[in-house]
Image (tube, rainbow, N blue to C red):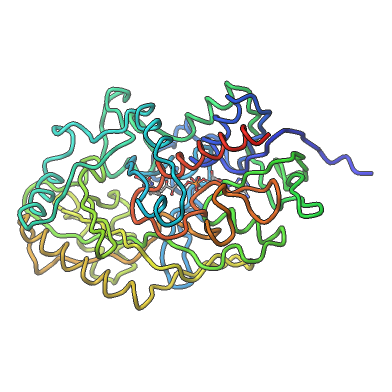
Length: 438
Ligand SMILES: Cc1cc2nc3c(=O)[nH]c(=O)nc-3n(C[C@H](O)[C@H](O)[C@H](O)COP(=O)(O)OP(=O)(O)OC[C@H]3O[C@@H](n4cnc5c(N)ncnc54)[C@H](O)[C@@H]3O)c2cc1C
């Protein structure tokens, strides 16, 4: 006999990023008894929230998580998941999700855009240096457009958005999935933080619950339906520990770099991140206006070589274009804790071509071609580790009855665009499906 804590619910949801927050909110509103288990805590009211110290506290391995190939991954672990540190960009799902994989979330996405007032920032808030980059791109024939945002300046105490918003939004203008966690709790969801789920309980090819630790103590939770929304790294690890060994074999990352150039005038550092973008669907990449926050700029550039941190004093005069590459599935998340994300022969030439386009745009915008440079690779969208069409059916169910996945792991290919609107769409669709099925 043990005194282990045992919790009961209709539905257990693991992780409170956009996938978990959406499914919990929708299912609770549809009358389900929902248990939401999150390994992090709610950091929003902490004095360090949205600061450099905060990024050390709430991102996995103090923001120093690397793949075996040296690609840096930012992985926030807290209520709201990665939306606590995201750039607030929104993009509808790619057409291939519907056309090739028969997952149609158009209605759910449209509803969400209305609900959260998804729209570009007004022209006067897009930043003059960011707009200068977009106009340079347009002059060269690339169709840059204002980026859709989950951001409402009027909600902010005093809208003061800049690269620092990637540490966490302090003014409140940016929507965070934690807000839907709040709404889920108002609708009856029971939220446990510091709940680290280790494996799914399975009996006779049916999910019966999960087990892990709650504030360091072992616990079990029992339910007929389990939804894993622990993100592109967390979800495959739980599945591997539960005997689903195919999980985590191969991943996508929307591999990201910044190309920087310097001007005499003020750069983009104090302007909202990613206010303008251009998507090259033919070659598979997205370009957008972006620069690392002030203190991270020299740290990340040190990884490139000793002379690059010397550009730190010019941070205020920097123009930055981000490349997000539609990388091919490769590497994976492995049971020994290692993560691998090699670039493939398909990826490298497309990244090189995208870099040349960025250099042309920056030159057109007035930057000196002699000191432009590309940053080391990093990954902000670990995804595609439990792919639709391989491990998941179109309703996001695994081979285990009652065990579902609803987060960035599900993407069958790299999205190469902001992920959150797609994940919310999947979450709404799954909640509706489960409500109808039971
Ligand atoms: C710096 C940065 C900028 C970004 N900018 C944008 C952007 O502008 N627009 C956009 O659409 N996307 C952006 N993204 C990506 C986007 O935020 C993520 O792809 C998205 O949040 C993934 O959602 P998810 O539900 O899959 O998982 P996550 O948001 O990663 O949430 C997973 C949650 O599960 C919890 N968890 C993990 N393991 C366990 C476990 N074992 N037990 C319990 N809980 C667990 C984690 O703590 C976390 O809260 C950005 C990401 C970063 C890091």
